[in-house]
Amino acid sequence: EAQVTQNPRYLITVTGKKLTVTCSQNMNHEYMSWYRQDPGLGLRQIYYSMNVEVTDKGDVPEGYKVSRKEKRNFPLILESPSPNQTSLYFCASARRGPFEQYFGPGTRLTVT
Amino acid sequence: SQQGEEDPQALSIQEGENATMNCSYKTSINNLQWYRQNSGRGLVHLILIRSNEREKHSGRLRVTLDTSKKSSSLLITASRAADTASYFCATDAPNDYKLSFGAGTTVTVRA
Image (cartoon, rainbow over all chains, first blue to last red; front, side, top):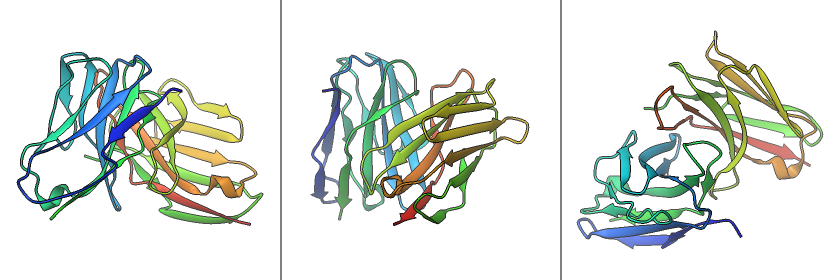
């Protein structure tokens, strides 16, 4: 089954404790992306990757890091999480470019 | 920055009625997409319309695009309870692979 998986699905952590949210897709897609969703703001793009070793900033990259060492995986790293990064995070992938994306189920992160 | 703005923010209709929502954007686009989200779950792609297209259909969905007015509309005909969801437009610009979403329209279909 074609899917995008994210782990963990729920995470409560404390300010400053480094964390990684994993994202994996099994569709051999070139394009992968991370978004955060906050009430009333829709989705905002954090980072995207056009292919292995090619990443670029979205609209809200501050406080986040990504890497794309393999085609299927695109982890999101928060080196020093802060409460304003409390949000619902989505990973997505697409065959080529930001078109007709497949979304993961989301990771709800709370930073206290 | 958010490129798309949906209107209305919320819409409540009776089953069987049509639902129309609009998306306006600020700068030139390459494509405009519509996605659906059910209650905090991952988004599902519905339809993509290119900047040189004016109208597109997919099942009960009809999308129009007016680049002169920088706006798009999504029409859902003969709505069903299962259409209850939030709908988002998303745009990408020429030579740019970022994607900008609007804040969404929440549609409630009453039985």
